[in-house]
Image 1: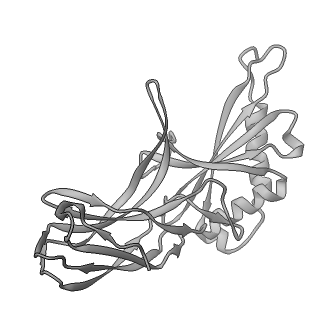
Image 2 (image 1 turned 180 degrees about the horizontal axis):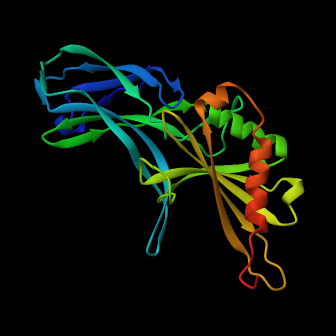
Length: 263
């Protein structure tokens, strides 16, 4: 069961709400399922709307501020306006569609370090949302994402951390103003030429765009610079299997071979 909370707008003796996520695991494009239990308080209550939203902690840089804030990816209405009688018990089921571009929390049968997502339940009263705590959920990779992550592992890259950044990946059809980065320590074959690689996914119903960034080490006549590359994996290709390690290795090599500022 979830944690019951009293709706703050009504104070002591007001109605309580309890959100239960019965299906807290999904892949992008699937659904998270659950229900919301409401119990009326001492007096009747008018509720404008109930909605659920997928939320995460996001890295934000703005002026002198740098830190984390909680941001919603998408908000889905569960029901419209109704009146909850005193002492009335009401159960409202919900089905939340997970975006193809949702961040991942798990891969390879393990939790990703630093990756946390939750569903929040908003009860709108008098036009103002009464926001609840996050109910943890787990998002597992699509087969195409799985194939790419397997290739990263086979090449010898080591996952260091994940985070969600505010901003946009240029040239992609990004749905939200934020994206997930998976940060890896360089594989042994690239270690002398780069320090780390960052990987992001931009998925859609047909496939996954893989966005790579490496920080190329500087030399005597070149400065250290970031390099970017992209390639795409269609869902149909991923279902047929195949080895994506050569594609990934070629993408990294192409970034590392680009000329520095002195040629």
